[in-house]
Image (cartoon, rainbow, N blue to C red; front, side):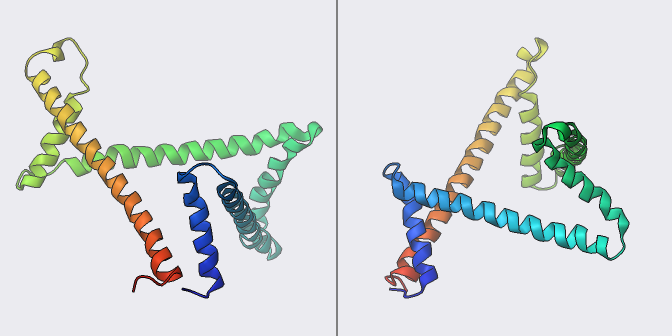
Length: 199
């Protein structure tokens, strides 16, 4: 059995979190609140040091352009003052605009351009053939017009439904295996590092 205080703390926290599998209890609630408090404290400290190193320090070194993001950041807190709350909308509008632009570019690139590029493959191997045919029939499943209700498109749509079910089943199995890997890691920690039962 380990005599390290950190190992004991981690083991007690692990048992407290997994105690929820029995039922909701005060030990789990305490662990949950401690976790939320730690995350909030870590976020606050990280934000403080980010503002200090990325905005205040360059500003004090004469890089006056950093006053703009610093001013936008301060304006976010104007909403807590009734007379100045309207000025916080400037920062919120800027954040929403930049966030929308970045996510739009990212979504188009990741979910459309790269997906099409990954699907357009030479049909020289069985894997490439499965990817191209599977993607094609999966797309055909989503034709909901009257003409697509019969004929070859209907057959392709049925094959597409099977492809989608196989893909979703594989994704579900991957998720289950990832969760199993996490729980095996935790039990391995409890039995080997904390109790010393395993070598």
